[in-house]
Length: 597
Image 1 (cartoon, rainbow, N blue to C red):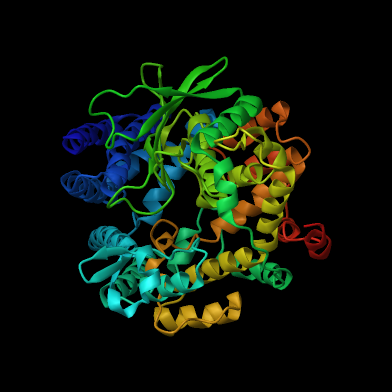
Image 2 (cartoon, rainbow, N blue to C red; image 1 turned 30 degrees about the horizontal axis):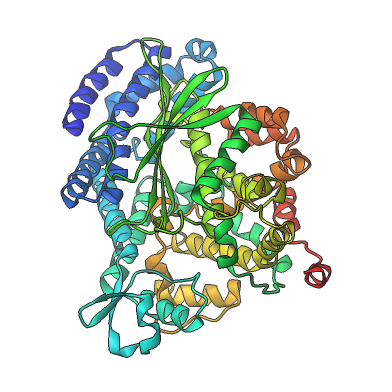
């Protein structure tokens, strides 16, 4: 129903856009058009992944495909494009636009250009068909990344079988079990979960080839060149930046902590209190639980939070879908369900987002307890949610996290720095039984252990980023995707490739972050600079919190990302600054630290 209504409204808005004389109203109509379609597509994007009822998931999948097809057709609609071109060609009108309106107009124009608006009719049709095929392949590939692998239970030693879900004579391996202390379980999970699947392999190959064909059809050398337009990086030469990081991050000392010792101090309630207290001190924002109406949520354990500012009032809603359930993918995500924008009647359309985690349920004897990694992920996803709530733009097209990918991860990664600061952790980490605070030496050991392994993690991120660039670089690829993985892993990551595994078939980020996985490193560099310069001295500094909101969160994607970074740091960072920021996070006096511990 939502889809049909949106498609009907979009037809009327297209006619209106084509018949309106050039002016700010043109941009308003384009944004209304974008809002109407995105509200259904974004909602369906979430429902198709998370809804427990298969019929809902299927209907959402269908809506995604139909809306996606319409969007691709509109992106090659010559008459619609002409109405925007007339506006941008009229110098007097352009000069009269405020910076945000002008940027939004240019972003819409950019969407037309990368979709092939300049091609003849036959080629435009071909571009639409390629785009629709890519959408389908993305969905199929994404589904395949989460599917468990089955194995005859007799293959595994009896004493580790209980770690996996039994199904008759088979065991289901649905993930890497990376947190399991038993290395035999981790080895079995790694080799079984990452065992190559021929169908998934051919999907990936077709996806990469189709993306390359589309990029070349619309005038780019590679898909990577097309994807980096409008980002902070802008050029696939970004690969060379990471070589410096690699040289500096090769040394890694492994320093283990037992996550189980920490869990009792990180109950979900305590962590949410910690976030509430941090947001209240930094930004004057509180989170309040709200009752949901019947039929409003898709699972009874979903909680709805109202985000309220001390003087501005209600800013939006966050639905927390935090717990594991059958058929729910094991991934932590932030979904925009509705973007904020200024409506035609002068009211503000409040943003609505969903945060999805995979936390264990509470038991009779204990509340939901988070490992340090889960706690950090909760902070990370909340960083995205705050960006959505505070990126209060006039236009939905650039609201909240709708900004270049390499800037979108900055607010979430910055929250990880807060989650790893003992002054912040100390405010909320309490033993769920005794109320005892987390001892300071345990907090220090936790934070240090992360830094000690940070070098290995950084290398892993560089490896993912380089692999992603090669996959989306020059085609046809020199070798199979698995051979490229093996070669890149041994050159860039240093740990040997495990035979008969194909990790790339589980690399779900190839869908949403195709040719843009480097964004995590780029965003980490910016977040590191912001943390060190603005919050490391006092993580609760309200004046800095306000500057952060004003300079970085408030604009969504309505301002050039580099200008936002400059506004926050009050200087323009160079490539060397980016590399230094990442490498300086790894500078630890390991010996002193290990002796102290």
